[in-house]
Length: 68
Figure: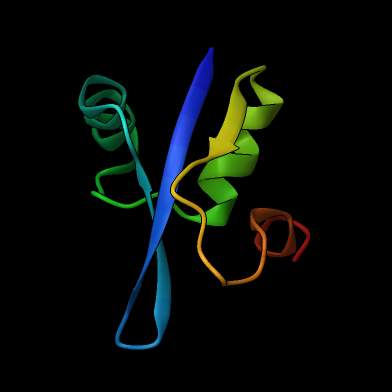
């Protein structure tokens, strides 16, 4: 499954959100959070999902957060 994510800078902190409300609700049920952490995204990838960043910004690419 393709999961589209976007990010926002809030008070200097980068937060990741899932774009599709239905998928976001399901993942939120598992993580108990509105945002997803890089660790959550890594787990989704390991489970076979494709994570795609949409609404790109001038910030570092998603892979920089996943490689830490």
